[in-house]
Length: 193
Length: 193
DNA sequence: CCAATTCTTGACTAAACGGTCAAGTATGGA
DNA sequence: TCCATACTTGACCGTTTAGTCAAGAATTGG
Image 1 (cartoon, helix red, strand yellow):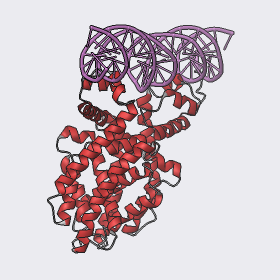
Image 2 (cartoon, rainbow over the protein chains, first blue to last red):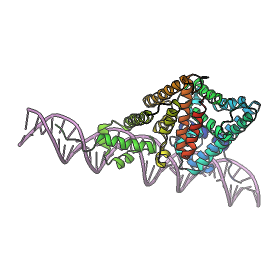
Image 3 (spheres, each protein chain N blue to C red):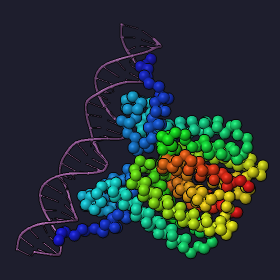
Image 4 (cartoon, protein in one colour):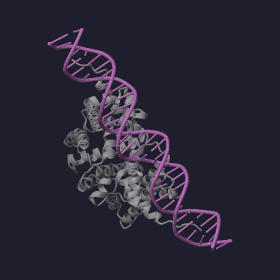
């Protein structure tokens, strides 16, 4: 029919996501993207209609991948408190470079504020699913009397989600892995009865 | 001696800080600054040497003002837990527009990451002083057996500082005042013995 | 083999950016 | 009064930006 595409669109999207993650939306230029992907501007325009659409696709990809990793990592944990700790560990990045980039969702959330509805929908999808996983563990913990019932599981889940967001920010601003991990362990420890 | 300056440098710095706070560093252009201040570009260059220097001065001003307000608001509170709650209330902004801008320090921290040493020094100065105020209240609370001693005052202070940072992010991303306030109240409540 | 279709390429555009320059202007001390 | 000094003004510079255009190239169904 027509000339076949010479690049792997999924791979290129992945690479673009990495650039956005490292540099942010505004600070990423088409030159950055073409240099990294080796795909010319007009070809990117052919698949993704513009920079913003490409960024939205990047957010969706990030969300899917991160949630998949998160759910896999906590699948084995049966004890509620251990599962909460696993969630906290899972959101921390291992290598120094990944940590300094912070979390793409958090970065996007702060870069766009509350102005862009599409961006915020992507962010909300990720936050809501994470919150669900947390709340589930908390409900079980409360049922087993391992976690305080002074406050509702919903309130406690929002509390822990907030602490995790703070931790992701700490990572980006240069805190050591141990510092960040310590804050999260404290946040979980305070939930115990 | 020489021709006197026609504008109030302090007022102009204040106005520039407001623009940076609303738009961020990168997204703020000299046109934004001159439109707001009614001061021409070259005159701004005369007082502040360039955009980055102007931003650094803005951060310092923000820090001074916010810490002054914070210290004033908690001065009256003698009960440690009430003082912690006052700290949490003080970091929340009242009107909707101010809330949507988030915290200039947090915004800057995420926009610059850990790359710019001068920027990070400004941010650290603010964070350290806030942390001191929190830790002081926690130590008193522990002495009075109102706050748990299972963890050190230092660890708990970092924990609460982190929760506050998360709350500031929530504000910017459009959460309602009540939601944010609720998360912080939970964070303080969990400190109680 | 050819033609419809899509992809690739590099040149191009118009606007915006941070920053500089030079010429004009107001001030107070000598 | 005059002059050194610092401020004001608008034009200017080179660079970078997101996005467009048009011409050429590769593919496969007919």
